[in-house]
Image (cartoon, rainbow, N blue to C red; front, side, top):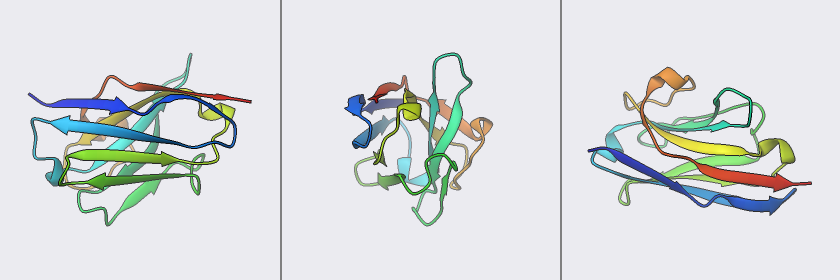
Amino acid sequence: QVQLAESGGGLVQAGGSLRLSCATSGLSFSSYGMGWFRQAPGKHREFVAAISRSSVTTYYADAVKGRFTPSRDNAKNTLYLQMNSLKPEDTAVYYCGIGRTAAAGTEEGWYNYWGQGTQVTVSS
């Protein structure tokens, strides 16, 4: 059974930092690309960042480029998202997803499984 569990969310002031984690089990983590998406109240889930299985390729949404960085530890079956210079518009529930292939993807349909999400709230 594939499981993903996000953690690390919380309340932070604008300009602050958070590091999200996504612990996985039940699959060969190192074989798949991984991604982060987010969903703000009243909005559709949107792409944030993605990383290929070997970390060679990364993709970023324009809104987070230069501030957020995905990374992974294949030995620990864990995906990370370092978020710096946070803005109030980054407030959302953040989800990690497991890709269908080794590549990274920017579309929601690229991903097979999702975690339950972790809330990130940025105050102004």
